[in-house]
Structures are given as structure tokens and as C-alpha cells.
Length: 226
Ligand code: UTP
Image (cartoon, rainbow, N blue to C red; front, side):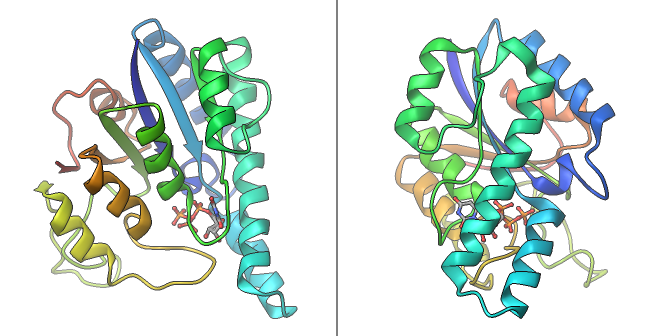
């Protein structure tokens, strides 16, 4: 079965609350496709992770301790998606790549969260894609692709439908560091994708038919990095 990796942004899973209706619909689609694809899904931390990181920073925690808090939240979100997937997925989120590979031998869908401080789940998904020899990674996020500038701040920003790995690296190297939200894709993840020539589809995760097309490697609305 063809391995496909999905990086599912925390902002998609839980905007203000956990979006159970969305999780049900997404689970149905993934289960339906799992006879053809082996899915490895990495869930992000979203607002809850940001909330903990902000509060922990105020209380004086160091950055890597804050990262550990973020990781816990990504794993909590992984458990939520696992719940929606039932017997089709692994029971508990793997804590590293070896465990994820192992889980993939027994389950058609593997769901995990973060792994180690200093990165985000985008990088985890890129490293996992390398490990399971996936040819494509789909980043389901709250924006419909990579833009020339932040579309929330710059009304003149335009979506970039296609770019090379090098162009992605240039774009993300301008992002800030430290625990908490990053840019369109984690720079560590972008470098991993470049070195292993893994394509990246950046899509709006709430648009499920479009997400499905991207997972299948078909035409989609968003940004294709290849
Ligand atoms: P996310 O992957 O959700 O990162 O992990 P993000 O960039 O902040 O969120 P989005 O994609 O913009 O919504 C949440 C936080 O958890 C820590 C980082 O601090 C990250 O910001 N984390 C996560 C790690 O340190 N290591 C990991 O492997 C994963």
C-alpha cells in the first residue's frame, strides 16, 4: 500500500473547541481511502498548545520545557483523532519514528503527535515521510496555501500555486524561532523534504474534498512544492 503522510494542523482539529463534526467526517474519508493508502498522520497542537506555551513562558519556563508542553498537547490531539478512527488506527500515539513504523505494520492508519523539542509537527511529518518512504506529504492547515506575504496582514499577498523546494526554504527561513506558532512550514521540515525530494501539498484542511484530492496525489487548490 502506498504510504502518504498527513500533517494535520492543530488549528484545524480544534479552533475554539474540538470540532467533533469535522473529525467524524475526516475519519470517514480516511477510513474509506485506507484500503488503498497507508496513512501516517501527525497532529499539531493548535490554540491549546499556544495557550500553555504562553502561560508557561510567563511563569519563566525555558524554551525546551515549553516545547515539551506543546508536544503533550499534540499527543492529546492525536488521541482525539485516534478516538474518531476507532479500530482503524493505533491505540496510543507513537513517541518516536521507530514506534510509528512499527505501528504501521499492524494498522492501516497511524496517528502521532510531536517527538522532540526544537521542531514542530511539520518537521516530524517530514521525517516520518522519509522513514516510511512516502513520496508525498500533505499539510492540512488553516490557510489555503503558501502566500507571498501573510494574507492576514497584507491585503496584496497572493497565493503561490507551485514552487520548488529551494523556494520553500527561502520563504520559511524568514520565520521566527522559539516555542509556539511558526510560518507556513517548519524550516527543518522544509530541509528534510528537499534532501529526500518529497513533494508537499499545502491545503486548507477544512475543505475536505480538496484535501482528499491532495491525499490522492490529484489536482488540488493550494500550493504544490516539488
Ligand atoms: P505544532 O506542530 O502545532 O506547531 O506544535 P505550531 O507551528 O506552533 O502550530 P501551527 O502549525 O502553527 O498550528 C506545537 C508546539 O509544540 C512544540 C513546539 O513548541 C510547537 O510550537 N513541539 C511540537 C515540539 O517542540 N516538538 C515537536 O516534535 C512537536
